Image 1: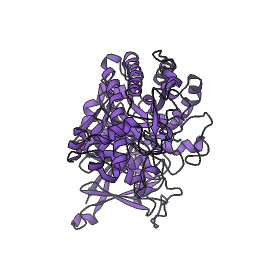
Image 2: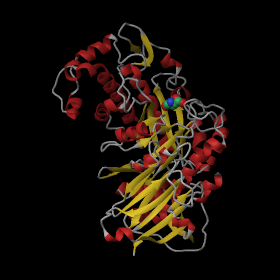
Image 3: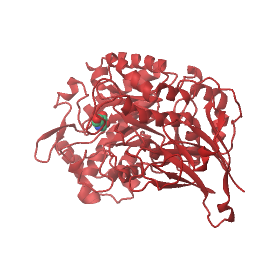
Image 4: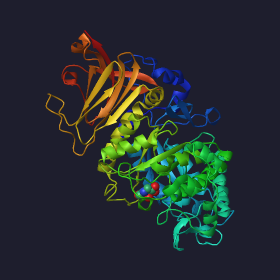
Length: 564
Ligand code: DGJ
């Protein structure tokens, strides 16, 4: 599998130096595509540009579309996240082999508050330093996950001096006067302690990472509270009785009043969501003051289709029903991303629609590692996603089965590796094209075995579960595993990759007389090297007569369509 990753790898530094103009124009013109029969050297994932020449990663916007820029150009994050307790130097030898096998270009790694500040005011960044050095050796970018006040609702990753001192750092009080294991967002001492730790972390990142190995930072992890819809402590009761902040009223277009007056039956949840979001925003602001990297939060989800009461999920976190509240409260947070652990196709797509908004770039920070999940990378990219990550990838022996795969072995990694290899092979072209609205992608659905993508003049039909020869009705793959990416290079000129899918093209306007006279002009298989297209062979005959059949070979085609 390493060879898959290596085959299609891109050299990020080379892109920066040699082909940024090409990347920028890839979406509108077939630039930087030179015929060549000389196989050039392949590069393993990313190499870092010299420190002085490396611009800071940024989220950029074009119309309603987004990209993350890395080394100055749009970039697709193809990430893997380790298990929760793999953030120690002794575990890294069990992390890298799987990251290399899966071909992730980015590693998502927890940085725990208890780990960096075991004694208040005394910081230890030795793990981060080790991690940075090894990430650079492996040519992998990093997303750091700040496990601070919240980790899946709980303060388990806060140091003992925080999580065991309820007087100074109070927990959420329930309506009947009990406490739950979630810190209240309403106490300045807790906020100031978290801000101080996160600021110290970001100050250190700034000092030791001028080359921006770290491309994004997640602030907290799945915030919200299990077991109470909000804090009912006397402090909370006083705030709840007070007026709704003006900035929230303005963002939502609501008249002034108390929380209950303005939000009625939803007041408890909205109050908690605002309180947590406001807290998280201040933590992010403090971190950005040190190092203004893109920052995001991840969401434990509310069912996207069947509405549930807030007692059924982590109340106050960035669930879809309070996303407007979170967006209003968090100008320092660039992205709110859904952690999607559902293989239900309709539900997955709905989550992508709910979180990929005009005001919110789409990024999936966690996705399950079982066999039905890999294809959702394609669906996420098709919704304009800037990146995607699979959770629980390392050889420490832990697996979150039955939610994820029972074992993290080569069979588990293979489908993710294949998808990552294919998308990495067109990484910069895809990221630029997606920003310009010139890319399409989709994954295999479950209710039908076909899917159409409207590319403008052309429509691509994706069929799943077909042999490479002949034209029977598509039967679907078991488990559903197919997906494809299509990138427009110019008129009638596309890059296509994917697997377990047949891709066929027709004119969108079937009343056009030419609709019956469609043919392939030329289909090249090749790869990108230093941003330049390298020709390998033409596809013709059986390989094209029944459509373009992508199997488990990581193949990239440049397809020129024509009518006669
Ligand atoms: C979502 C959390 O964000 C992860 O840290 C992890 O706990 C998974 N759930 C479950 O494995």
